[in-house]
Length: 455
Ligand code: PMP
Image 1 (cartoon, rainbow, N blue to C red):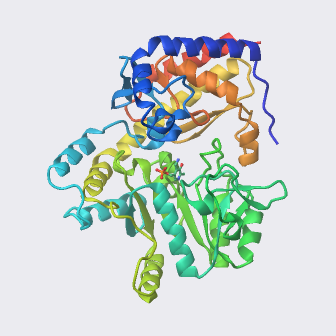
Image 2: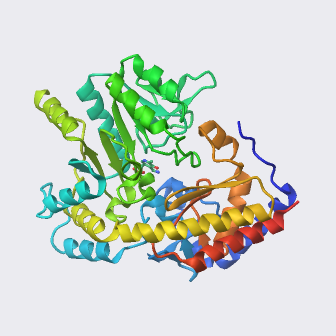
């Protein structure tokens, strides 16, 4: 296991963090006032309690977000490498999506009927992601939930397999952990959980192809659901050949191979599977797919589509447990069409890749000059600064490399210098409009931070 190097000087880190907290409070009086005004009306003063996960004394209130910048109500501008944790991966309010949304808003928001653009949306999904048949949902959580239901329906098998450290949204079956002895455990942090999730889920370590094959050989697993690289417990890239081995095990044992590309769509046009020549039975893409408008999609092969329709046709009349009323609304379809045609383009990816490669090199340079045994792992436009010398091989190694005190101080230090990074671990996402000046600003800020806390 990779061990965590010590924080250079814990005392200096604490002092820095305290000073940065005061600086934030001093420079954000309007956000503080809005936080106070919201507090009586919302739990923890926020409309989604995750908004308190930022390393901030009080929430940062947004005045507007455009391109790669967020502007707060106190008049500060931030270069955004969080991008709504991927929802705004191609920049905030991409003009083609903003225009399509405005035009559609004047012509109907939701009707539970398809809009005239539907066939064009389907053609674009096939062109970009390669799979022929699609369904549209409101969120990636929903898309994953529904794919698991379809997988069980078409295979008649009760279990799903996920990897330790996975996150696929609020999908009960996937909210599991792996015990030291390899058993599947219901995640301890879940609220209101009454079912034993181990009854329907098997969890194994990422990058352990033998464990996957052994679990699938039992014949009761409907599908493997995974991100091509784990991105939610720190970035854990797949070992060479691992995903091909999982795909082959799925074929051998009659399980479906499902890739959740919600974050790994950063890899390149069409997502990781397309870029790396994988052949999943189903793919889920959420968050950024419609330019930030609530929407996600799942695509399946022709063979799986036939099995899904047969399962539905054979079922008694009534609710399938799949779908929600606002899914595939006219608004979402209009945004999806504009996003696929004009935003999620090869040109945008080329710019993201070039700037992300430059940022990775700059951060690695800082870390090397400071003599720290840290690494920067990158998946196209997404990268992660990790406090370990090599990219971790599984979730246990990724967790061991985390240091919450260091992360939180770093995030606040960067924010006070006009740079936003994702509040969960050290993930940076590079949008197409970021450039050399932004790269230099992050590298300089990291260097200043490290200089101050050096032992
Ligand atoms: N899949 C992955 C890989 C994710 O990272 C997330 C959210 N971080 C989701 C699914 C769920 O997305 P949402 O919260 O938009 O439903």
